[in-house]
Image 1 (tube, chains in turn red, yellow):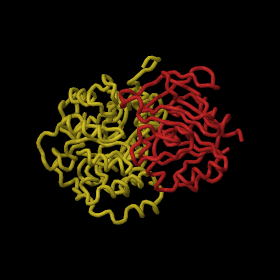
Image 2 (spheres, chains in turn orange, green; image 1 turned 120 degrees about the vertical axis):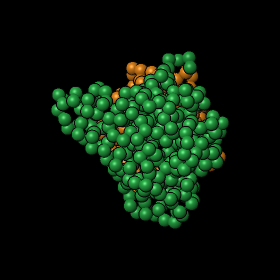
Image 3 (cartoon, chains in turn orange, red; image 1 turned 90 degrees about the vertical axis):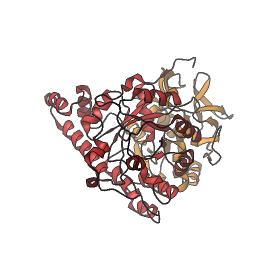
Image 4 (cartoon, one colour; image 1 turned 45 degrees about the vertical axis):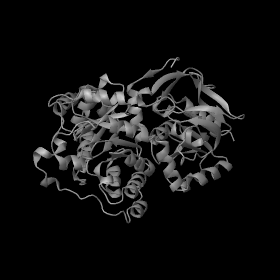
Length: 192
Length: 297
């Protein structure tokens, strides 16, 4: 199994370390052609505006949409979840999401950095409370019919799945708890 | 928040810095510049009243920016906004926290307010980034509660030599600590004038416990890629962008070079036709008393 982590900007190294600890072979993806042969791709946390600009400048939008049709799984964390959304609630006019997943996401939904927080989450299918780390986080405002809600915090959706797509508004890569990464590999990437 | 939630933890403080990695943080003095920076792909902006080159030229006492400027910049962009307070000036820091900035830079670019102590950064919910020239300085700042480090370089010069020197010193000293035997760490803590627990952490992990950006003198895409190849996590560009001929284009080019720092073809392409770079200053031409890097204890 080969998992790529988009390495344009943000916390990509942390994702790579976790996947390697779980025995997956990983690729740091900086150019679209590096997605060749990947079973899964992670869009990491970072600054969504910065990542989106670099993605567009290097042709990632078309390339990811194309790879999706050939069965690549995609997981977006925080900024990555924003990019995956069908619609961004409070987008800047020039901010076009990738539109992979039938969710509407609101950016910086909890306020500024002083409002960033940690909270235990009940994440479906993975058991005991999961340590949620929310940093200038978005939340998922609404989901389409085919989307399964996996976790909520304070009445807001913070994790969801639609077939081979996973979105989390928090940062599993900043914890030592590997369960969400394992869930992505075992329940999404490995299931063809 | 009705459900259990904890704000201001070290993990969310250091976590924001993790999200900025591989990115460029740009000095701006107006909302218009902040938008140019955001459009170019900056991961954050540093709200200032003057860029370091102008602070250097103006002389006198440099202080925290006017809250009106900071607030206008906070309102103009959706990326994180940082702002500088003077070394040891905890009231300026309190003001910046109340204005809603996302990171405070306790910075040697401004005139120090305390010649002995830095701000006790554990008192704040907002995270701090601090400058350092070497490992001891970095670990002292972390001991005081900083959540991110930047090597200092020499601000406002457009001369990358000090940035390189500080990054190399940092990495050399980390390698030295990592290679020591455990009983030597007590002596190392004494030599570095740094908290023992942090020295031990560096020994065990072979790296700093927080993100380390490079700052102070980066003016070109090649400078940014140089610092990234040397091993920093991202770059601050101060005067280098808005003191140049075509700020928007140069800003975009530095962003791309920071992401693709290992790809000379891309760096070559983005380095073309950027217009005038900022005029640089040789470090030997700056009197000792005017070297900003010497500030901080």
